[in-house]
Image 1 (cartoon, rainbow, N blue to C red):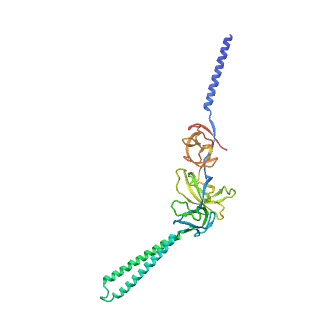
Image 2 (cartoon, rainbow, N blue to C red):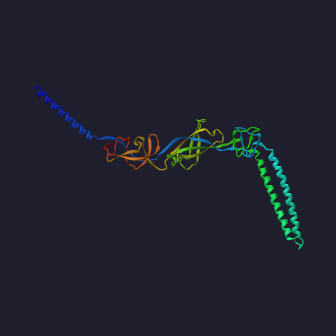
Length: 361
């Protein structure tokens, strides 16, 4: 009797478990997840970024000697402010002065020969007007002699001018106004060799150049006010306005960026060329685009996508990333305004999955 009762209880328990399992399976099969979505709309994408830049002088030149000789005098030193045409140093080369004197003498001799030939030709020419007095061949010979002496005189003039120009190179002058940043000579130094260091380096720092490598994603965007705010480590408390003046027009294959050049007025000289500089740039997309919460875009090794809900079914839509604005992300793809997108997307929600939509507050 006890065995029969036990067997009956076991059957009842098994039947209950089977009913509970079937009921549970039905619940799992019919359960639909509820997800938060938002309605996609066009927006104006903008981004403020800070980029490092190279602060350069507006002009920089290495001054070298064009003739060989010994430094006779040095008129400036590093830090000296110079004007265009100001003498920086003098070179002593006595042989050049001797050469100029020699050529001056040759020029005078050539001038005398030419003048003599011309006078003789003028007299012969006057006499030849009378028939039979001067032979035609003699007149032609005299004319040729005058022309040859004239050419020799002009050549002597050119030689003197050339040597005098070389003599002018004995005075090293500033090509433009600026400041001496390097000096590599002393009195008595021999200069004029091809591979030697420059005598001086001069920089014009009244106006500075700022070169910035702008990432490719921003190169076709609008730069607000066509300028940026510059700060340096030496003057962290001050901001300077940097005006965009030119672009390189090409993307560097190594850095995937375009070189932009800004100009910064520096009348007081407080900014130093070569300083480490950061510039803050405010970019605005030329046209409105789609901006989604950063969590709405999934990035994998293969692609980037968002999840669109259509008729309560999940769809993966491939997108291309634009401006990354921290908690928001600009995207481009086969999307339309009014689409319902998953607020927090993930790879676990496969395409075709049935979900219940809950609009984000």
